[in-house]
Amino acid sequence: MQLRVSVGGDVLVSIIIPTYNSARTLAKCLESVEKQTLDDYEVIIVDGLSRDSTREVALKWIKSTDPSRHKYIDVPYRFQAIKRNIGVKASCGKWVFFLDSDQYMLPRLLEVAVNYAEERGVGALRIPEVPVFKKSALARAENIIKYPRGYRVAHYRLFERSVFSRVGLQDPRIPYVEDLDFFYRMEVAGIKLGELPLIKDAYLLHDEVISIRSVLLKRYYIGVGTARVVWKLKGVRSRVFYKYFASGSQEGARLFSKYRRFLARAKRDPSTIIPLMTLIPLRAFAMRLGFYLEVLSLKYKKPE
Image (cartoon, rainbow, N blue to C red; front, side):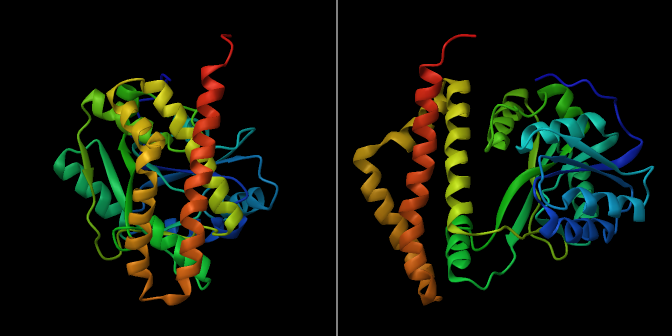
């Protein structure tokens, strides 16, 4: 998808926040943006199909800060990629930061990340994130699975504006793992990539809703998105995905290995053992269900 936007430079950083029923966390997310030590930024909130008070929260914050500087855009779309694309088109920053509405920026994140990227000539930077601690055993079990590197992951969230001119926008046909497709395209385009180390007061906190329904629904859509990435690539890398998702003979051994690894970590928190034993196979089933149903849909889809 080609990008037609201005060269940018009116502000240093454009923060794009896609929202969907985000009233629970949006105010705190925006408050964390306000507390940044770097204040040369604009915020663009792109909401789609929210049924809660997300719109009211966003507009109230914009009105209380600077309506001429920040934007709220309402669109009839649910998933992230197309909302981010619309936000990028409406932005004017030299750098673009993709922030989710359930994430909170620690105070020095923008300043440290931009300086780190500029000093190293990086076009796209992975930003570390850690989960907000949850009381429920289910949530703690899910975080053991999601954060295999000791409650920390990193995703590409800070981009130099020229990256979008070279690579294009995120693919709106991919509901989840759109960042994986975008990563491959950056690699092909020769974009210099980097990762911000975990630095005090310079990372993201992720305050995700965790329930059986939300976990399985997300895994299902990750399967759908992965199938679309596979179908789109149709090359060496796609075969890696097919091997991962379709290796029936090795699936039992891999699942057992996951059980063993995660249960070793769960010994420090015994109340998570039963949720872990429940979540691991259910997550795998939901993702593979989404993957295979989408592969069948794409395979037998009639040409338009």
